[in-house]
Structures are given as structure tokens and as C-alpha cells.
Image (tube, rainbow, N blue to C red):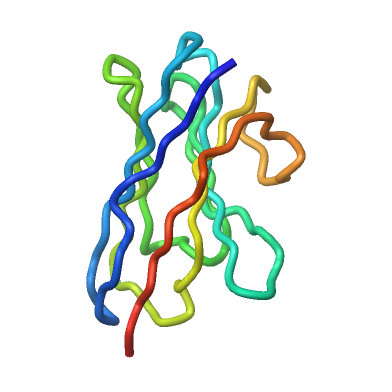
Length: 124
């Protein structure tokens, strides 16, 4: 299995940027599809973005399309989420997730491994 640890969250003003990082340890990182989800208070956990094993394919949910960029560095066992033009409605706990599936999927149940989550707060 793989262990995931997120970092890079915090408080930012609307219009600002944050870069979230996800460090993976354990099994071979390049064997996993990686994704980011977010969960606002009182709401369901939702898909933000996903990236294929080789980074050849990226998929974005509606919330981050055009503003967020997912990437990965298999040599460093790292996944990233660059978030630009942040809005107050982006405030949530963000989770890194890993899947042994061969394709990127937006369904939460497809991801077997999860980080502990980190808070992102965007002030207006």
C-alpha cells in the first residue's frame, strides 16, 4: 500500500494562489493514479483533479477547471495541485488520494488510499 501526506495548505486572500503537495511513500508511486478531492464544511467530498500514472492525462472537476493544475513527479514520489485565482468558495479540506485503477476517475470510491487532509481557507 501507499502512505500519503499533504502539505501546503493555509490561509490566503481571494485571488491568491496556493500549491498543495502530496508526498507518497510505500509502494511504487508510478503504479498509482493520483487525485485531489475537497470537502467543504457540511458537504460531500468532491473531485478536484486527477492525473494518470505517467502524467499523460489530467482530468478536472468543474470547481477547479481553468484555475487549478495537477501535476506529479514520479522520481520524487510527489503529486501537486497548483491553485490560482482562489475564491472563498474554494475553502475546504483538501485530500490527496491514490488509486490502483488504470484510468483517472472522478468517483471517490475508486481511490483506495487517502491522506489526512489539510485545510485551505480563502478569505474575501
